[in-house]
Image 1 (tube, each protein chain N blue to C red):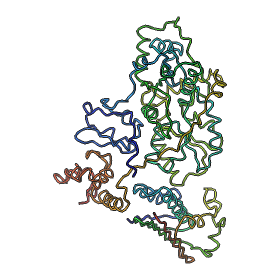
Image 2: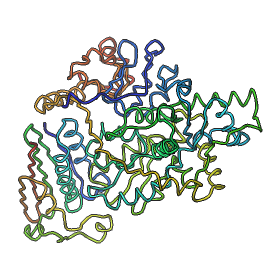
Image 3: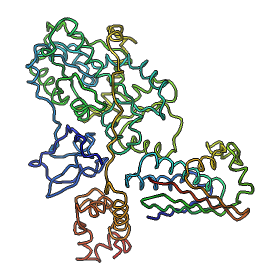
Image 4: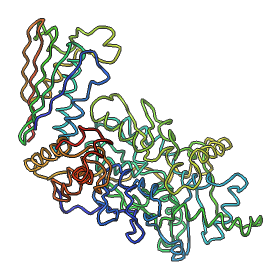
Length: 439
Length: 137
């Protein structure tokens, strides 16, 4: 395989000093990128897609999101914060949009903008893209970066079906950057920051696909910012006289729903489907790859259950977040106040190369060796290992252990059940039956 | 590597199991996506043919570094006129089968188009054997 390609930039970090090696993360990883080695969770960096499933289940918070320190904003004279609608929807109703903006403004941001302002112009552009797309359909949305990476690693044959349009977040960032540029402000003075509901978006901003370079200067952890805002509210309350003229909270009823399930697909002509949560996305892509599903024009795929409402850094219950978004959306106009300006200045269509496939090398790049190893791994799986996927060996499944053994990353000695069977076959057979251990 | 699968006639719920497993295997071996696609299209069609027309059947997939060889043997009514069955659009499928989205008369032509070597042998009232070879490199 290509040895020269740059390693994946990851926004998730395992702190070995905190990790207790409990293996919960290993069991939920959709790409089987985690193993327990020497009592610590260990990541296979080429396989990790930054979906954050591991982060969600870690009981000791040994996995953290590599965000930017909020103090970084003061490196810039103009400090723009791009806030997704999800951020506001985390707070109980009595904390109004204006109150939240007031608190954020007090923290040092000079301008606050709703991320989803960039969504509206994308509707026409996505429809045009889908209509004109010459490759095999469905076109797959580029919105969720964890899905983009999942496709790169686990479904590389779909890489060129990923839509080459930037998401609303990047459109909005470009808009504000160009506004400052137009007003003669040196770009070194302009710091654009984004509040992220997940790790994948950090990875996507720091290391975007398709040769795109993001104008975003820093990414702020939504959970941390939530705590800061809520603390300020609890301690100081809301300052009604807050001076925040530079708040562009304008967003349309369409835009505010963009991060929720169906937010994109509902506006796309033809047969468009919206699928959320990692297991559902994987199942659908498997069926698509198996030629069982045909005739779909557009796919909105989101890694998290309830899309961004269920983001790993979103504080409140995802159903409540969705409810608040729906409520907020009811009061909003179909077009936001900057709709025309956005359409004049911005586009989701930027020069981009196709997304690079990064297929997992399971056994070996040479197919002859790969085939030998696979045959041996399947023999181990079917004839030797107990196939109860207990995880005690430090691999997520018996099949994964078999793969590790044939690739010299583990030995058969790792199987704790086989040891237990040798020591006391009667007890093991009492639990797992006589046929489970075949030796 | 040899993989075998038993197929039951009429069991559309399980149709696709063999092609799914073969796809997964080829993917893990790092076989080129375009080759995998041809294998999946051909095998899925042939697998559905058994489900739709035969009583039961067996699929054998032989994977070597050079090629994928598939042999599908079924016990069923057989194909009286293979030439006719190879004509695009020709179908004997019942209304019931067509309503499920199968039986458009593209099965055999589709398999043939995706195969590097394609052999079909059928005995009326006994069954059909289909052999498909697809080169890996």
